[in-house]
Length: 80
Image (cartoon, rainbow, N blue to C red; front, top):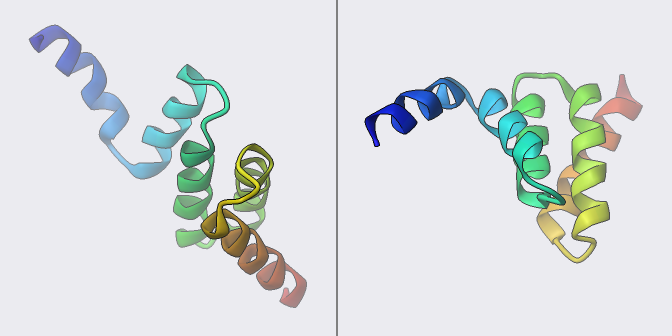
């Protein structure tokens, strides 16, 4: 277990790395796309977050959090 833990710890350095890894190793993971978009938006990288929020909505169109964050990102970009 120590070897696996050491291997996984490098993905937990920050939210962006963690959720990029989650997307890479899973399929159709709307939560990972949503969380990556949220992490990017939180860093002020709204344009980058847009694609991830859009993918999250495509994978889970009934998730109101995904829809809300997509709307927020689009609104912020429109004001730029």
